[in-house]
Amino acid sequence: MARPVIIDTDCGVDDALAILMALVDPAIEVVGITCVAGNVGLGHVVRNVATVCDAALAPAIPIFRGASRPLLMAPVDAASVHGSDGLGDVGFAPSTRPIEREPAAAALVRLARAHPGATLVPLGPLTNIALALAIEPELPQLLGATVLMGGAVRGTGNAAPAAEFNIYADPEAAALCFARGLNPVVLDWDLTLATPIAWPVWDGLVAGGPLGRHFIGPINTRLRERSLARGGRGINLPDPKAMAIVLDPAVARLEPAALAVDTGWSAARGMTTVDRRWHPAPPNCHVATELDLPRLLALVERTCQAACAFGT
Ligand code: BDR
Ligand code: CA
Figure: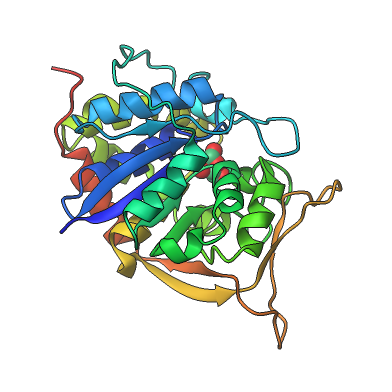
């Protein structure tokens, strides 16, 4: 029987690949996709998820609208990375997939009850997950596991000097998730930076099949150009690495960790610290410390080779 997976996303270009990796995996059933504002505004995120499902010729998967802004602070975005539409401004035809009326936080709780032991995969700011935890404090017990992309456990920020985007975009929500027993597996930005996919390897992967050629490659074209112009060695794919841990747990080495989120209003806002003292605080998550790049590449390769609704 396929393993149930619930994806929560602020669908930018790396979220798109992560979602596709799950959609093409026969061992996985994506039972719902909840949307949250982050990389781009909520309207774009919802449209992008529908487009991603179209691209992969996915069956009807319920898509839910979630939080359009963080719990407390003003919204931030990452359109400079993902394009103004969040999918590289390629201009795909609008999807006709329906969007559910049920709010994402309620849907997360309902899906977790309907699929006990499901894996939750948050790929964006943790606003929807925090709201779901407020509705159902037993959410962690209903879920089998949570594997999220977020944080920078060695302090190399991307949204702020010491803060990674998903945490920085809603630190209060993130702090709540780590404090309320979600006990996630964390794939962070520092490990992402340490494991880029070299450009020639990436180019070979996306040329390798219909979904790569007609969707995954095109949505990443601008990011590739920008990165090359800055001397980047390869593509940094945070969200697909988190999804890879779900699809193939042997892809990562994990260590228990006590992780704290800074919710102050200083330069450290959104920073994630791991307690590395001799006697650390009790662990509240597992942090991925090493990635098996060939295993990850095999998952990306299979995804690029899948059928695509776009192109000739
Ligand atoms: C995270 O922020 C977003 O821009 C990416 O989609 C990823 O989830 C990386 O910091
Ligand atoms: Ca994301």
